[in-house]
Image 1 (cartoon, rainbow, N blue to C red):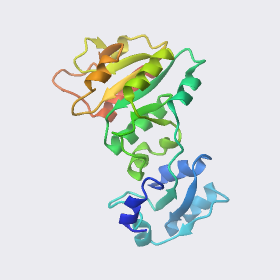
Image 2: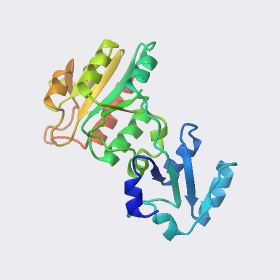
Image 3: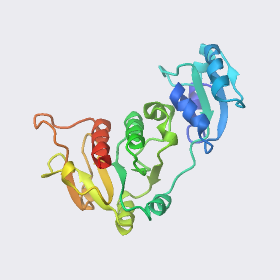
Length: 247
């Protein structure tokens, strides 16, 4: 498959690469596998971990034909269908009987590696789901899955058409909407975590959009050195989710 064909088919198939991303995808019964390609030195690992998987042993040049340039693949490439969508209603139903839980909402975070890194933090800190606006969020990709280090298989990435409507649905389901704002007076470690929380993080450039911020019940900030304007959104998300998960 040429790089051009890879781009054309990105909506119907995804090429995952890197050991962790590929192994987690192979372990996920919801992941529809099309083709697994490995370098000869990795055949033993596949045989030891996956008894009945069909794979192709190829040379490096053939493997890299289906990958983006400079992809750090570690000798593994998996052609697969994108994960089936998870809907907001599914997450609301899952949260129904929980006294406390948290969700992360991303308002126009457009870098796939940042999204992947945020999903990784979400998995580490027991986040129920990551909600994104469909139009302004990159599709599932190898770069996103590589940054997530396999955790795309563990945390639902819920795509919604209208973020404001999704926030209203969360409010009706008992969630408090908390916006991250570097100029807020209250710090995140001061809020009550023993409830249902949906935390909104905006893009690095412009933060939350006005309508999104107006939909928040409260805005809070991270307690960082005032000489530092902000953190990378994925680094900030990791700290936020750590704070939410502290008991």
